[in-house]
Length: 244
Image (tube, rainbow, N blue to C red; front, side):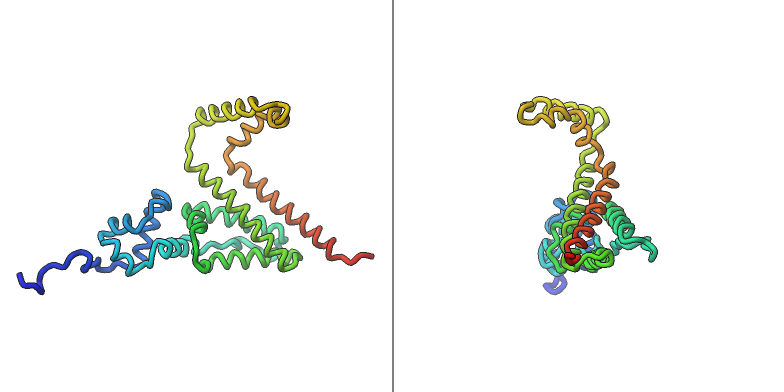
């Protein structure tokens, strides 16, 4: 066999048709099935039948891959689905949060990728920010107030939705849940009553609430945020009103 016809090693051959989109798509498949921590360039290379070095033609490094995955997963998120002109600002805010939760729920990697993301922000992120800002400005909040509130709301929702995702990854049968609940209550009952009187008195109720599916409290969470916004708007109006 001549030197020119000898087969090239895999590192030189690469893989015909391999693209950045294909690399990202396979990474998303692995991450969705096994969690984001299962995604690595070495694992992707094995899955795609190439050497790790071959992937660097398509992604600069692991962080570039994470950012590209986030761009794909978060694409199309729209908090304004179902908005109508006659809605009040509180109705739009409630619907926006429900839309966001529903669409994040449908994308298991959305929150982990959002946390790991270091890029300039996917278009859907800026679109959601724009939509929430429009609601609060329309409600009468001053611009800086509205931006601060959106930052606070984003943190609250992210924490709550992460709690929901963690709860899904810990499947317990009813007997296990009841056992954990009883152990929780016993732990509270064992606290020194003179230091933790209220927790001791509330041991059963606290254990029951703590072991309840967090999804049961979503409506209350939305109420807490919206009622809080209404109170803050009223306070803001009072502070802006000139003294007689």
